[in-house]
Image 1 (cartoon, helix red, strand yellow):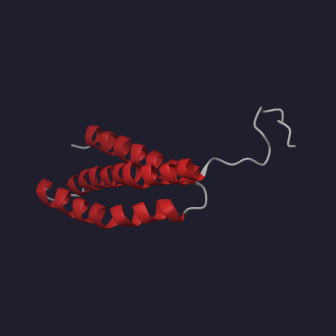
Image 2: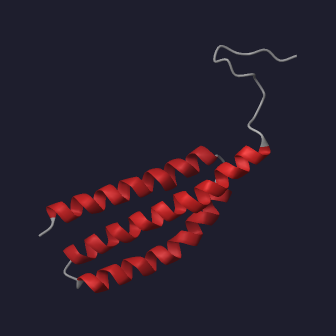
Length: 108
């Protein structure tokens, strides 16, 4: 019989397969969407700061995000650890959205 370690977690036990699958599916759906949204927002701000017309900047960055979204969703299933997937997709999305807000404040 396995005993509990100092952290209170039983050694050798992993999360149930349904929980792991649910975590990957939510990372693929919501994390990838947030990442693509942040990429579109940041790209639109950078394009506008670079001198593009605002409509062109939004269109170009949205088209790029449209390509990145399925790639990020598939990557969420391919990454070895779901926590890494959530950190990259969720954290990256939050950072990109924050950077786009900062670029909008700093820009002209």
